Amino acid sequence: MRIAIIGSGISGLSAAHMLHKEHALTIFEADSRIGGHTNTVEVEIADRKYSVDTGFIVFNDKTYPHFINLMAQLGVESQDAPMGFSVVNEVSGLQYSSAFPGGLLAQPQNLLKPRFIKMVRDILKFMRNSDAIIANNDSRPLGQYLRDEGYSEGFIQDYLLPIGSAIWSAPLEVTGEFPVNQFVQFFHNHGLLSVKGNVQWRTITGGSQRYVDKLIQPFKQHIRTSSPVQQVTRRDDGVWVKAGSVEAERFDEVIFACHSDQALAMITDPSVAEREILGDLPYQANDAVLHTDTRLLPSAKRAASGWNYRISEGSDHDAQLTYNMNFLQGIKCPETLCVSLNQTDRINPNRILYQTRYDHPVYTQKSAAARQRWSEISGVNKLHFCGAYWSFGFHEDGVRSAVRVAGMLGGELL
Image (cartoon, rainbow, N blue to C red):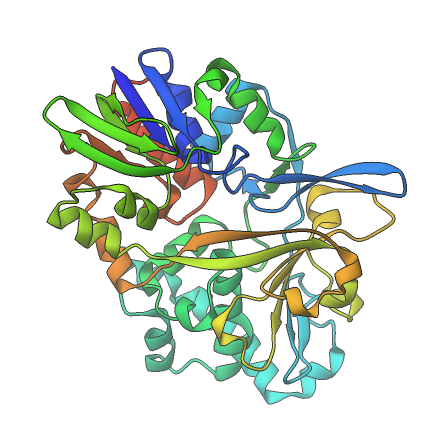
């Protein structure tokens, strides 16, 4: 069969990896580069070059089985990554990290503050209650659950919502709409509901672009970059794809490995189900900047972490997060290389090395319901939909989604 794959992120490339031996593929990529959120930027500092990940950074040894199998097939090496998390609340002056006990007590004076003591108490309470949330399949919005169950404002605003906001790059107010059972299930799977955790996080040695370079080798000649798809039209003789200035081409099947909203905009005759389901799977835009301005990191030394969340006046509308890439990638550099989300106006312009934008899926009650309806539209009438947005939005979810689609098309599965 002739199959078009729209998008060259982890989902599209994984699907191509599993299908290229059996089918004639054409991969359309709107951008000039391949990889989607896998975006390793090379910078030069003090006459030495460093490869810095700015989108996809880490995975773990427990909940990424498909991705790990793919890396093993490709022979891609990885290394341990420290995954500490810190919070700086500019309004209250609070600073702490997840490192126990030193990071939690990065400011010893917090032991005298009732709000902090209540936060620590409620962390333990939430861990104890997590099994019941899953067992009862409690689907209340996270924010409503926390209010109903009497959790303290310190726990909600200084701990749980910032962690959720950091994980999904979503505003604090949006994080509160996440169904609590799915939120807790994710935390449980990733070892985030214990003091010490139980998973080892890893990063691709030398930058995540290494896996992309190896992955595309067998079908590289079939990838068309700078080829944004404008229209996908179903006809009796197949599916016609119009991209860029090239005439529309006929394919037997089309795989949308792009974002849900992008896919819906391309289909010229979407069905009612396609409109409903894809329309209920929105995305959130986030500005990302690679820089060396360490003012965006915690000033309390014991709060220093790989992931650093900042709460500021009016910050409910965007996730404000800074990754310390020297920590996460083990980079030995005279400068501290940082990737910050949604804090561009805070960064010294002379310290900026690279800027881009990433879009992340939004998790609400409506989107949770839409994700359950995948089979109503994927594999129906010659169109297939794969992407990390069908699950929790991470690399493993993207590969798993591609496996699901490739299985329907007779691919060689991971």
